[in-house]
Length: 159
Image 1 (cartoon, rainbow, N blue to C red):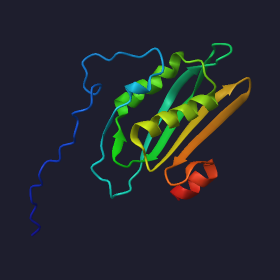
Image 2 (cartoon, helix red, strand yellow; image 1 turned 180 degrees about the vertical axis):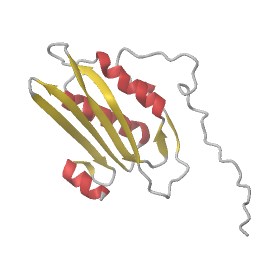
Image 3 (cartoon, helix red, strand yellow; image 1 turned 135 degrees about the vertical axis):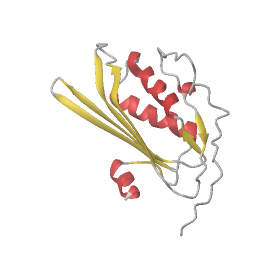
Image 4 (cartoon, rainbow, N blue to C red; image 1 turned 90 degrees about the vertical axis):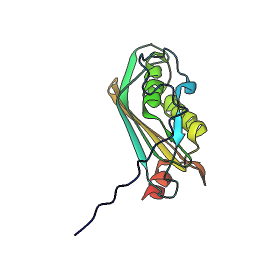
C-alpha cells in the first residue's frame, strides 16, 4: 500500500510585494515601470516558461488620440526573478492614456521587463485590431545570450 507522506508547506517570498493584496487599487494614468514588482524564482534549474496574456490592451494613437485596441502576450523564461502579475496588470493598464505607436509600446514593454527581471528569454507580442482596414502584429524578443533578435530567431530558440 502506498503511504502518503506529509510534505512541508512551501512558502513564497512575498516581502517585497506592495500591490498584491492591497485593499484599494489605484489605477495609474501614466506609464510607470516603477509599478512592476518581482518575487524570487524558487525553481532556477527547471527551465520552465511563463506566458501572460492581456486580451483587452488599449493605448492611444499619438497623432489623433483615438484608442487603439489589441492583445499583448508576454512569454518568458525567468532567471532569478519572476514578474508579479497584478503589478504587470496595472503597468499594462497605464498605457490606456499613453499616445504611442504600437511598435514603440511593444519594444518599451520588453525593455522595461528586461530591466526588471533580467530573464533568460523574453518575447513580447502585440496583436492590434485593425484601424483603417489594417491590423498589426509587433513582436519584440530578447535572448540574454544573443541580445535582441528577430522573431524567427527567437521562435527557433524556444523550439
